[in-house]
Amino acid sequence: MSEEVVLKLIIFGDAGTGKTTLAHRYMTGLFKQNKLTLGVQFHVKKVNIALDEQPSKMYSVKLQIWDFGGEKRFRFLLPSYCRGAQGGLFLYDITSKKSLESIKEWTSLVFENAGQIPILLIGAKADLEENRQISKEEGMEFAKKMGLAGFVETSSKSGQNVEITFETLAKIMFSALNKK
Image (cartoon, rainbow, N blue to C red; front, side, top):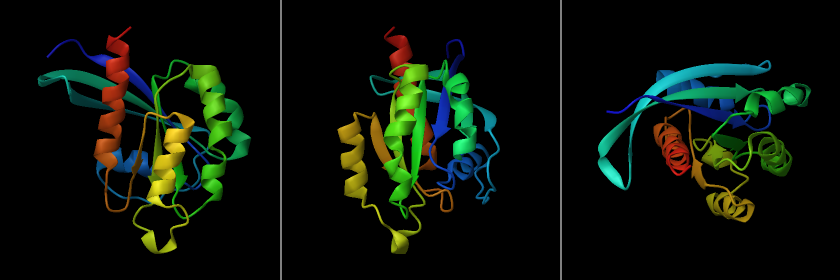
């Protein structure tokens, strides 16, 4: 295994979409409903990844995970905290059309301050299927239309796609870093 690489990942989106719950599930493997995030929360997790083109070679990666509070009153923090980020997760709640409507505003802020980093569109709360307002197909189409790096639906409650989401973005970020 080669030298450890540090990658900065930001999680952003409207308040109540499940950003902190997703980060907590990824860090601990446990589901915990969270209260409002005040400003930003910071986590670090070491992971080993293998790239698709070299599946037998493992790379040690330290993910710095920056989870931003989604309320408008904290939005002023985003520009300074997203500088230096190499990837992002934009979360929306599949039970709330409104939570996806602000994606252009959010991604514009991120791209303006972090550059054209890869962003995955995440449909959160997939366990609430009976309350769904945004179909999986709509989410995929939205990610494609916005030119994002990909799309996935997750459930922090069940753990559905939580690990693979972070692993996928880490691979994309690491690959982009190696192409520079």
